[in-house]
Length: 637
Image (cartoon, rainbow, N blue to C red; front, top):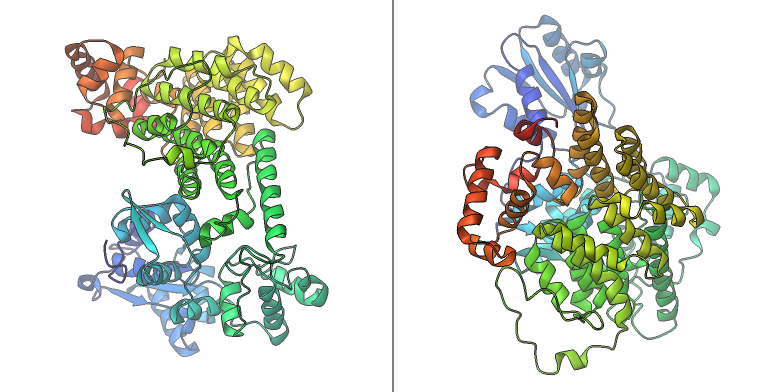
């Protein structure tokens, strides 16, 4: 692992860096860069103006700290136009008039730095530690740092120093309570340093009633709202420090304030009267996640007790935690967060290695990203469907399952195999689709549809639509939509009807509706369908661009609809072989799987390389990106 204390790479600010450099080129006056504390203003400045350029550019970092005379001098230099200026200002801090007039009088353009996205944060963390970082760890660090790159770095340093950053199977993972070092505390305190006494005391009282690392509510969990003056609470809400239900917004305010007040943490172990409320809350969250999945209410997922226990590595005495992880994985998968879905599944399997729903969700998400080894391994660890031998040998890449430890299966808790079938069959469907076996995938999806489980029936029927055969299920989806509550079922039925009619405009509307509900991968597929059926080239390209933007939020997912759009000039057989090659299979393994000769596979790949403009197998992965690349490869059809 790279030492996290060493300088971190400059990441995810390429456009901003280009803009700053262009405004510092000859004939330009310069630029003002503003941003919140920890947004990277100083680092951007260092990248834009290396030491060799310091003689030709005047850099004024943290110009909000200048006195009035110095600010007036900077203003005069900008008016003169002979000195190129790079001025940085912290947002939220009052700036001297001479500084603020730089942009209010349009003397210099202003670049407002926005916080890095979670995706950019994942890229930065991977480069900083020198390897892939687990999606739950990225999400947790992203939330805890709240856009402050200084705090992000200090958290990684503290977690690494404490030995809590583990490296398992090529992935860096953090579980446990947040480390409150002196530097972390200092940075968090910066965000509340301007509170008055009443506001500070109110935050401390709310912090004392928060769960304190175990997920168990402490003794004062229900009292803060009743004890605090409404006017104080309103001020805290207006500052964005407290939610409408009187909870702290910043995940580190609670630990830091409790440490500052020297309050002991409440244990909340497995004994005593707190376990029952915690178990009840966890069961309620499991039900809520299931209801959200079936209703399509996925745009926002509240963070609750189960997520806190997973992050803090507690709740090992809670039997419902693996089920919570499975349901949280399903929600992440439906939202298009495929890597996060895999992380939640693995968290559940860490706690219960044989949990069927976690295995199925791991297989499903892995199939979406083309990780067929993981998908088939996970499916092989669950029970085979009743009356059916396994239809897929362990796994397609030729690996073999590890020999189980003695009595391992007998030690696992007994589970009802019926839920396994309803979860595993969709995973198998998409594993087959990822291999290019669309006929097998379609048979698998149709086999599950109609088993009487409303929610699974709905998604299984829609899988048939996603696989490109809407006419087979459009009527059945319409029947379900007539008796369903909420917006999801009618929207899925409209998707089937629109695709069956090849109505591009209707498919565009479906895509927008699915995106509004939070189903980003499904929305990307609907846009991809629209792009393929629009007769007008411009409308097709607009749908293609929308599909590309939506797919970009899906953490590497590539379903058959997106593959068809990304590789438009290939035949069905070529797409099948290219998909398998991109998933890592050798020519021999592809030939064995498709029962063709190795020479036939090689010939198809050579033809595909020529059509796609790729020189060899190494370039295939990047070709699965929807958008202009696919348009150049094949154009509008």
